[in-house]
Each structure stands twice: as C-alpha cells, then as structure tokens.
Image (cartoon, rainbow, N blue to C red; front, top):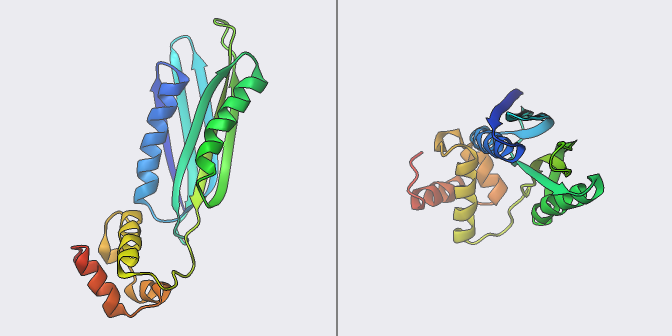
Length: 184
C-alpha cells in the first residue's frame, strides 16, 4: 500500500486542478496497483486556488488507474452539478471498471454571481482475467499496454503468469516481447 498526492496552486480552480491531476496521473501511471481511496480539498480565494488530491494505492492488484475532474459553472448548484456530471459521464461511458472514490464541492464567489461545481473521481479500469485466443498482434498490443502500466520496465513482468493469462507458452511471450523490441 502506498499514498500518492499532489498539491498545486493556480490562478483559479480550473488551473490548480489541471496541474494537480496531471501530476497525480503521471505518478499513478508509473506505480502498479489500484486506487482504493480518494481524498481531496479545493480552496479558492481572491489570490487564486489550491487543489489537494491524495489517493491510496494497493500495489497487489494491477489496473489502469487515473483521476478525472470537472469544474463547471452554472447559475445555481443544480445547473453547475449537471454540467460537471455530464462532463465526467462522457468519459465514464467509455470505461469498464470501478470508481474508487469521488469528491464534490460547490464554490460561489461573490462576483460574478455564479456557482461552480467541482467533481473529482478516481477510476480503476477493469483488465480481463483471461485474454482468450488473441492474434499475435492483439497479444503484442496487450503486452505493450502492460509494459506501459509497469513503467516500461520489462523486468517487472512475470512471464509465466503473463503466458497463463494469454493462454500461450512462455516462449510465445518472449517472442512477442522481442517483436516489440523489448529486452527482458
């Protein structure tokens, strides 16, 4: 188990969130595991905004994982929240997986009279347990994705386990890695 976090300041909530999420998503892509919890805090004032995001990651389970966010204005909380939901749901409809956590905050600055809904969600995408009969190109694509998940470190791959998942021999996995120009 480990904790990953990001704290960023920006001229407004949008900029602060953008910076924090980019930094955290880079960290998440380099660390194996799945997000188990999300905690966040957004503060906004005249001088700018601060975004704080913390996630816990269970390293015993491999998932593609990342943070999505929306900061949408509206004339009231309902309108702002619907806009933020629509933005997040546009991404979620393309994903098979789970939400590991979410954060919601409304900010209503005195000028202009507008309410902002900030939504942050932590996503773990599902990885199929068994790959079935994939073509060699399909296997290579899956191996390339697996390498990216593991920070492009081929030494971190358990070849026997990967071969079982794909339903092929270890020699086939060696050949696929060789075709991807990856040294083990």
